[in-house]
Image (cartoon, rainbow, N blue to C red; front, side, top):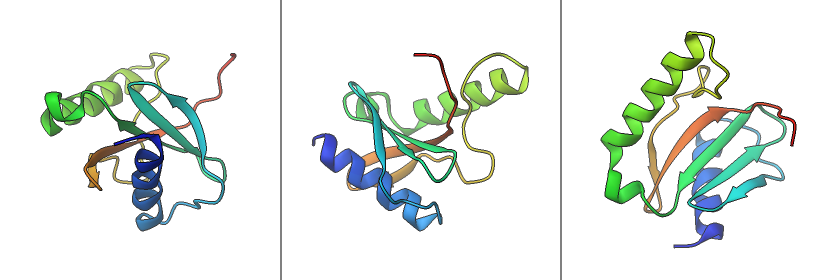
Length: 105
């Protein structure tokens, strides 16, 4: 499974949740594919290498920890609050949804 399939899974999840999906932007393509939907604050994270080794429970714990750190005021991107953050299973991928955070490259 490659990048285009990961992007397709992210787009399908976003579409089903009502996110504007026009012109998705791939922010990163390494062990995770990060897809930003510019007309929203949504970034879909699609693990392409370790997701099935670590499993759904690991991703759920990651979302929980990131939310806890964000809520404590630490400078982390947190999982979406306005939408179900996942993990969502699509086309053999586990997709999680995160808040888009501007950063200084």
